Length: 285
Image (cartoon, rainbow, N blue to C red; front, side, top):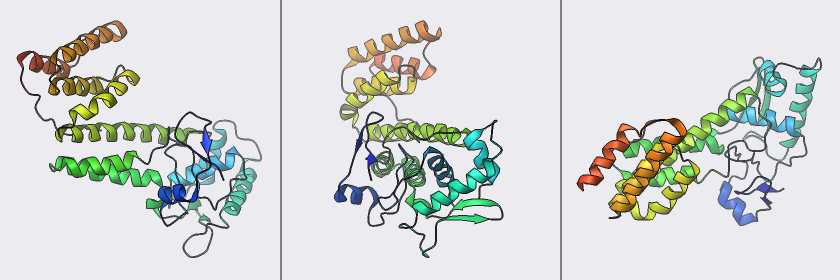
């Protein structure tokens, strides 16, 4: 099977055995939503986009039952056809067929039907979104406890699971759209935490190119601007830091009619006075 690579939408590659081994480890039956929908190599995607949508919904609600009405709303929202229930059942059948070579631990299909609806029974740590959430929580706790090196490592491992925008290429209804927004916000939070940990480790010089790129990609994100300006100041580039401050002030006034935040204003005073920038608490989600 072909698996999408990081990069522009539509770019793909066929990973070799070692690449898949590095992605999935010894257990090759793992799944990914942090990018395009990623399936293990033994699951052959012979079905259409609606089956992939149903699987993505079940995956993000792993080990929780979902009623058939939830799946109907996800596929058709306000305009379901009269055959919606029968169509869902057909899609579930096709989904089960995909897992003949990737069964649950007891040998049964991981897609089960119960009184409360359909459910994907699968170890949550074999889903990249769940593993990412766990690593971010670990990194955040380590940073709060004054262990920035361990925090940076955990957060970097979590961010490395991302291959593109969440659920890229999946037809999303209301449930998946909500999950995609939540995952992207969590990704930004993890990135802020990792940058904060690296700054506490004195990695400001190494961070400059990354922060410059983040500022260019997110021109109205004052947090990224503040960390870029802070890194410039810590590298002894006070004039460049002040020029970046002036550019931010001009941008905010032209685009939003606003002055910089109090944090940016305090940062400017610290730079002008030549004082070191104090350590901050971890960014809040």
